[in-house]
Amino acid sequence: MKLRKMPQTRQTFLNCPDWVMARPIAHRGLHDINDGRVENSLAAARAAVESRYAIECDVILSRDGEAMIFHDDDLPRLTGMQGLVKDHTAQQLQQIALLGGNGETIPTLAQLLETIGGKVPLICEIKSNFDRQAALTHRSIAVVKGYSGPVAFKSFDPMVVEWLRELAPDHPRGIVGQSSYRGADRIGLTADQIAELVKLTHWSRTEPDFMSWRYKDLGQPAPYVSRTDVGVPVMSWTITNRRQQLLALQDANQIVFEGFLP
Image (cartoon, rainbow, N blue to C red; front, side, top):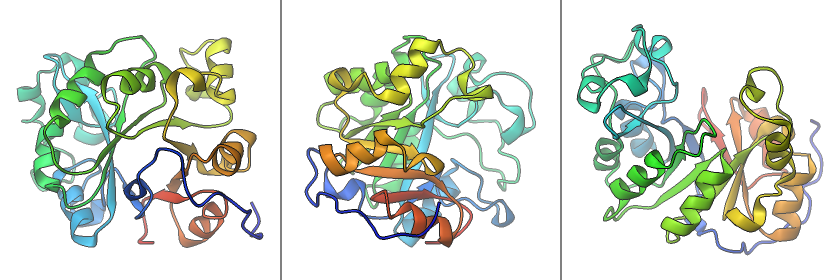
């Protein structure tokens, strides 16, 4: 990608509140393992709040149906333990220490909301295996109900976004995407599903308020048309330095960042 003149875009977006794109979004919180702040930890959330960044988090379901703040399906990378998250109860997961986290353990979505306390926006990604299982979506919506702070939801899975449209219309919803699926990215996906994800043919069902698109794919038709013609803003992931930030903001409205301070 080369630096170039920013294209003309709409300044007023269809249904997305200003707060969704108002501040850079700390990817899985403002984490820094060298400072004992692990991704998706309460320490990373507190650091983001202190610096006034919005927060992106991942939610995944425990065995007993709780929304846990954790990215991976399995435990080894972040905890050193073996096994899958879904095979553990919320109570068990809350007792598992995060590697390098100074004793912090895997939090629940409710604990994260309490930590943030409405001080900064939360962009909550609902993880999915594209298996048409709605339990995590239902639980995430239930936990957020009554929380007074700004929360938006997003997912790679159009079915999840469709459920959000129906069940949580008051919360902004976004589709996470990229313009190609290769290797590990396409595992478990059919050719028809990939075409739907890339070409956004689900749009009439999902009606996303914003898009969250892979940085290297910003010049592709889906995010470009969404932003410039339809009026749906785009956040871009994952930005890791200032040059990428400058490039991304030519074609996106906001960045999801890690590894530096924008």
